[in-house]
Amino acid sequence: MNAIPTLEQLHALGPLQQPRYPDAGAVDAAVARLRTAPPLVFAGECDDLTEKIAAVTRGEAFLLQGGDCAETFAGVTADNVRNKLRVLLQMAVVLTYAASVPVVKLGRLAGQYAKPRSSDEETRDGVTLPAYRGDAVNGYDFTPEARIPDPQRLVDVYNSSAATLNLVRAFVTGGYADLRQVHTWNTDFVQSSPFGQRYEAVADEIERALTFMKAIGADPDEFHRVDFHSSHEALLLEYEQALTRIDSRTDLPYNVSAHFVWIGERTRQLDGPHVELLSRIKNPIGIKLGPTTTPDDALAYAARLNPENTPGRLTFITRFGAGKIRDGLPALVEKVSAEGLNVAWVCDPMHGNTFEASSGYKTRRFDDVIEEVQGFFDVHRSLGTWPGGVHVELTGDDVTECIGGGEEIDEAGLANRYESVCDPRLNRVQSLELSFLVAEMLRKA
Image (cartoon, rainbow, N blue to C red; front, top):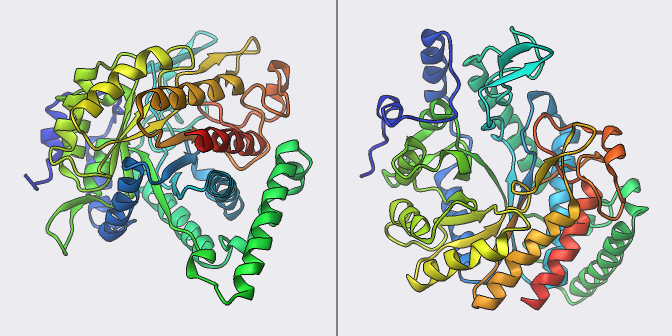
């Protein structure tokens, strides 16, 4: 069962959310180029992440997964990548220090260029064009030329992801992720916020602890670098299939486009091509489960995607919405636990809480995000299971896309710096605030 399904076999299963390319020859050329491209990640790194997520499955670690809703090619700059990495490092430090639990760091980056859409088309002022499906597919500008799906963009995704991973690896091994940098990760606009000041207090304590450790002659390698892995939604079959390779060490198939890939809420048909492709690879994988998921669905996904019940292989990422999680989640967790299935439970508190503000902007209330995470923790505490992590859309920038939080952004304030090309993200201060609130929940868990 180690054979990689062909694109023809996958397309025969009726894929959803795929671009309609006008030029089949151009698609073939892009796929051929991807097939010869070097791997972006290595099988051994994927196996390491599986081991780390196995600790999450056992209740011994917590997964922090975060990054852009949809990356853009223009966003592949050193500043942008560093800013995203910085906020994730800050959040991880808060969670690790305040909750005394190891944190597995997983970026939603270096591949998150495609987005499923609720409609194939978009209409503005009587003009109808194909919907923007992310830079992997077409352009954001509302013109007929920009909105034509272009398969050359799949090669651009590969190149942009390679550049992003190169930067991330340089930052995490070249001194930037050193724990002695905890103060330098806090920039001016964060320092002036209440949660930035709380972070400074934590950083002071960490600095004192590091000074003590050094004084007694302890300076382990873990203080100077971090393990950081990449992830994205495995949406575009041409890209994901072309970057699925047989590992020379093990003769097993791995998706070498990211360490961790997941199946989205809109493409999780049990007999569909996304489940089929990810059932074959050996990477750790995830699947988004929303309010329509039944307990039997969850068991069926586990049977299909993790038949050997390997710890760390399968993560269930729940996205119910703040008003539905307490009713919808318990039955899933109970049935999965009763069957003895090894899965990591992770909360996506973003995708079930999106609405349109009166100003027309897509937004989320920070309070709803926190309420969904709290509901997730409450359900797991009541059932004696482990709330394994959070999956958040965030940015390292000072944007105004989600309402509320300590900065009290309101609907009118959304227009100040709304920069997302798709869904609203938590800004840097809101992300830090979230990490403190989650750390308090973890301490109680």
